[in-house]
Every structure is written in C-alpha cells, then in structure tokens.
Image (cartoon, rainbow, N blue to C red; front, side, top):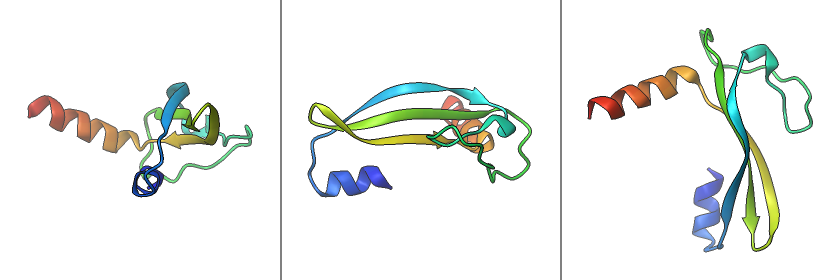
Length: 83
C-alpha cells in the first residue's frame, strides 16, 4: 500500500488520526462527505473506520479515510487474543 511506497522512497513522515470509530454501512461517506457503497460481503456489523493525514514535514500531504471489514478485524483480534 501507500505506506510501503513512502517507506521505499525513504521519506520521513508521521500520521495524525483525525477521526475514528464505527458506522453502519449505509452511513459510509468519502472524504468529501458523499455517500459511498462498501463492498464487504455479508455486512451485518458496524464498520470500523479511521480518517488520518500523512505529514511530510510540517504540512499534511495526504488525507486518507479507511474502512475496515469488520469480519477481518474480528478474526485478527481473535487470533491475537489466542496467541
């Protein structure tokens, strides 16, 4: 993803989380607050999300809004707690 590309270029960056939480699938929006359709199969639970900026020095260069498949998050958390 973008993190690997930034790392491969040797850029010094940091991330600042602007917002995070969980939304119902029909509440999902893009960075411009326009509705979007999430394509997670069998979506029954709220969808975790994180909105953040990647800074290159003192100024933000990239703003991202990520939605995470709740089934994958649940699976990862279960495996971490068992390990």
